Length: 96
Image (cartoon, rainbow, N blue to C red; front, side, top):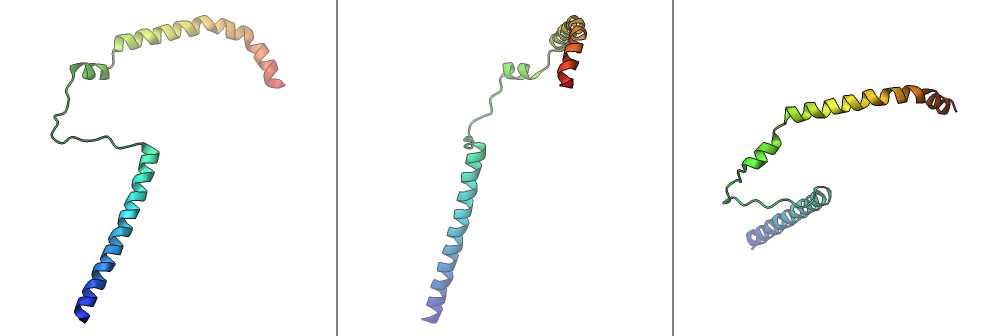
């Protein structure tokens, strides 16, 4: 009888520990969902999608980038005289 009672006590204790650990995991999962949103579902059987357009969008078009930088530098060159004319006005507001 004592052996059976001890076995029951051990099983009950293990159950309590398991429930507490499940609660901890549940709290962490709720926090993760709150901070980071729900986890995306993973289908193990599904093959990864390979799309050539997606790969092309990851590449940098250096010609376009250089063209945009040239446009920015041209705009700065055009604005520079206006900034020189406005600098006394800006200094006036900075002093007050």
